[in-house]
Amino acid sequence: MSVVESEEEEIGMFSSRMDNIEQSGIRKIFGMADEKSIHLGIGEPDFNPPPHIAVALKEAVDAGYNKYSPVLGLPELREALVGRMRRFKKDVTVDNIMVTMGASSGLALSSMAFYEPGDEILLPDPGFVFYKPHSILYKAKPICYALRHEHNYIPQVDEINELVTKNTKAIITNSPSNPCGSTFPKDVVRGIIEIAQDNNMVVISDEVYDEIIYEGEHHSFLGDYENVVHLNSFSKTFAMTGWRIGYMVSSPDIIEHISRLQYYAIACPSTPLQRACLAGLQGPKDFIADMVSHFKHRRDVIVDRLNAIDGFSCLKPTGAFYVFPSYDFKIDDTDLTMHILKAGVVSTYGSAFGDRGKGHIRFSYANSVENIEKGMDIVRDAVSELERN
Ligand SMILES: Cc1ncc(COP(=O)(O)O)c(C=O)c1O
Image (cartoon, rainbow, N blue to C red; front, top):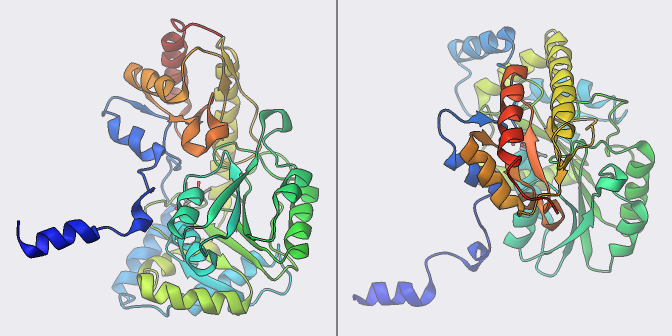
């Protein structure tokens, strides 16, 4: 062994930050699916972006929008986003907005900007798979607040208040929720904001499903409290998960700080794609309402189908495009997911979203009614042989 090799072994090639970072449960299962599987696993609309947006992308490339954009994003797109965000915060200006590479990069940069070793970060359990690894990366301590079946997966403000300590730096919120499909009522949003204000905490609010709501309206965390980082995205709204464009809305000071990180991480978001998203914001929006009405019908189908299978109990989600049924089969959630996968349906095991996800599995209903029906036939037959508790 050469000197260099032995030194490498001692020092370790990967940083200690990587020690507890594992592949996400969603991707693990996705990687095991075959072409014949029915996909109710990954959360992405099965639609295409509306034609006027695709045309605008081609036009942008042809017109020479192929260079770096400003780090904060194209001014014309930020301006158009001001119009969109005023429904949540009346005094928003372009200084409050940065375009990102999907909400994913906004989440990653926020954790980089705020988390320090020893900080406590409040996050939902079950919650989206990014939140915990982000806090672990920066040696901050994830502290979970519960989303429970008996509370319609809506957090309890008093419980959150009890989890706050002098080390609490931030709370992550996600409404509509992935994986639960719950939407937080106004008083819960207000209650969490009050806790954050009283304790000088940052609120990192992931609102990527804000347009995918079936009952009531969306209540944003964005408002008068300065230390809210609102993360949003075109991925779901315009059915363009592969395009990787999102945005962050926060105080000018936070935006200015995080834009410095954005430069060193990605330089800028893709320029032609930003032009195409601008066309999406300026053009007709009936596509979104149409997509949401399809999702609503599919939700009704999958909820009815699951509740008709002995052993599953499924709430009716009010937003996003996931159902998160609990079950009483004598099998853990990873094995149940594998069992269903072998039968031909991709889902995600509940514990991929946190300890409280045990005893649940997540199905995404961003698939045709025909596939959902076929998938539910397969699930029904596959679980019929399982023992119940
Ligand atoms: C809750 C939540 N936040 C963020 C993301 C990532 O969004 P984007 O495609 O904008 O990076 C997802 C994607 O599934 C999500 O479900």
